[in-house]
Length: 127
Image 1 (cartoon, helix red, strand yellow):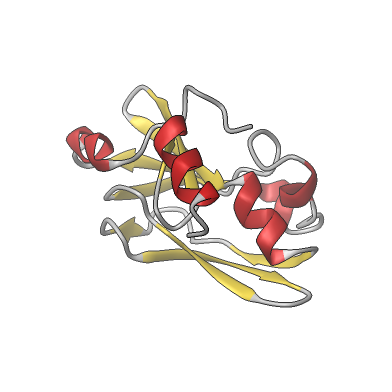
Image 2 (spheres, rainbow, N blue to C red):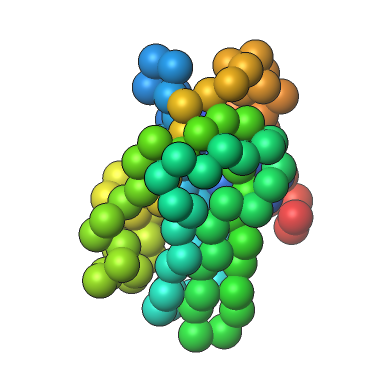
C-alpha cells in the first residue's frame, strides 16, 4: 500500500514534502521490480538538479535503475546508511530507505506529481 500523504512520479519515485524541502525515495513497487538492491550511488550534497535530471543510481542483482529529481532543487542531505546497507531500500522503501533531500526551487512543481490513488492505478495498469 502506498502512503497517502506522499506524491509519486511516473518513474516510481516517492516525494514527502517537509516545508520547503522534499525527501525522495523509490516506491515499494520499484524495489520489488528491481529485486535485491546491492549498491546505491547518491548525489553529492550541494548538487543542483533540474526536474527530471538523473540524481541517483540504484543497482540490484538483476538491473540498474536511475532515480530522477522529482522537482528542481539543491541536494541538502543524502541517506548515509545506504552506503553500507543498500538493502534498506528493499526492507523499508518509505521510511529508512529514503535516498536524498532536495531544497525545492519551485514548490508548484509538486502539483504535477501523482497522488497515491493515481500512482496505484498506474502500477496496476502494468506501467
